[in-house]
Image (cartoon, rainbow, N blue to C red):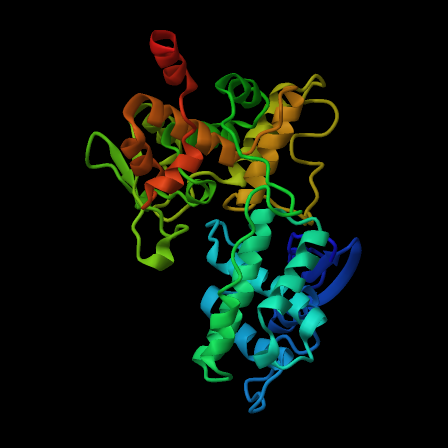
Length: 402
């Protein structure tokens, strides 16, 4: 793979037979077998990690002096159990980052196997890690991405030391390799994620289906994560008080034991009211609702009399390859917004930028502590990333004292 993105576990619907799984790597299509089957997932894990023994049999035992291949062969099954199935990143709608973590470990494993697979794990030292990091830089990966993946390499060796596969001094030595610093390496820098202007949001909403537009409005008012938004259900919303409290069933930091509460005010409540008349465990925002509304609009705009031509619904395919589901994914929600922004002829933006916009407004009007509470951050330093400083305040000070 020539990019830093992990190939997706994809689904191909076929009439009259079970759905098939496949993935694309460097433009090539690889068939994996029956979608959702353990065999297809095992093939997928092998492909994205670049190894032939990436998901070994349970009875596999490394040698007393293991090489890097053997270390990975034992670590990756553990990581798959700990972080979750790779395919869940693309099939679940909770936006969880924990299962994506495993996919990133598989990508790191691919590079380790290719670069140092036959070398003894105990001989993999700081200089060897730095050489691997240089390859990451040559791939064109961003500095922060490289730092994250170097840390994963160190965690793999730390885990191996904890399993007594080699002496702890091996992993301790790797920990001496520090992060790449801004402006002090050849690695590319990430483009900062900035808030999106409310004018652009308003223009985009006019080109979105009603359901997706209401999702964007809800996120703008609450500042919640896209993954928290798409899994919203009536049973998760406490409506006993004037301000509703939404507690997502799963969220980004749930595995740390953290709780997440999203406050929903009167404006947002008006938006959600029309979506609450459904089952307690049904998702509020459903693609099939959006599709039915789209068809209703098409029927209303029909020019040909109903007595002529096809009747509404008669031209539909009985078993279409793609059917609207019961919940959006973070990806489908994001794609809908970026496409609508292009139709509105404004700069394309993503739901994550919408969260920045909400955070910036809260910080400007209520302070950093309030922004931290709205975003659900444990550390105010994280909130600083989302809530941009209000330059207007700095300008006002400069006018008076500068």
